[in-house]
Image (cartoon, rainbow, N blue to C red; front, side):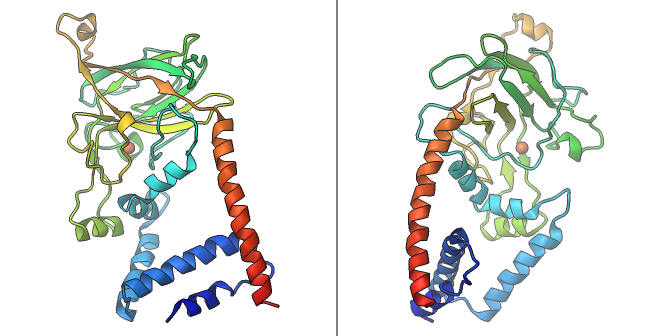
Length: 311
Ligand SMILES: [Fe+2]
């Protein structure tokens, strides 16, 4: 069927549909029709796709979101994340996907404290740095939430052997914007691959591993909340992430502690210096507004066209 058929479907909107619905769903219909024509999709292949989508729903519950996993392995969440946090301003820390294991209200610790509530192995690491704006001004009182998995690859809520809120905590930057905490050098782990997302990985002949990473959520009034991850440069998956979330500026170096360092006596094996740069919410809003203006122009043209067709 031709583009004429697609155009016909795209005009099938009632008068109560909003301009945004017409634009977004119209675009979706166009792309799905183009994909179907381009690949000569047959009834059997379409039914395979329908069953695949149904299985995503059947596999999901309050503990597992297969829709996110499938999005992740085709790079969709990483793409959406980048679009959501886009800004014309330069110099701020890149965002990365939040992942499924964030919990709010993690314990508040003083700077320098450990987030390790129970020894689970791994290399203790002192992480420290400064939170600033894009001009280098310290952001006193910035709220820093961090979380990472244990060396067995499990986050505390997945693992009955770990106490609640193990390996996660909340810190506040001091008057100079400085923060610090003790955690573990992060471990690579596989995303769940016993469902449709795993089937896709297998079809593409890919592994399910994510590079070792620490998750961050950093917030301060008037600034855009930064959700990101940092990746261990020595992890072999840092350049081969199953969910495509790695960006160059959030790959970091863990430095081994010298034998004669007082940190060694405290069991600290690595240090990590990591500064975080936040961007004003206003900058993100300005960039977003430009996109909204472009959309409004498209919607105006589209509505005029649909009105003329539906006369
Ligand atoms: Fe993670």
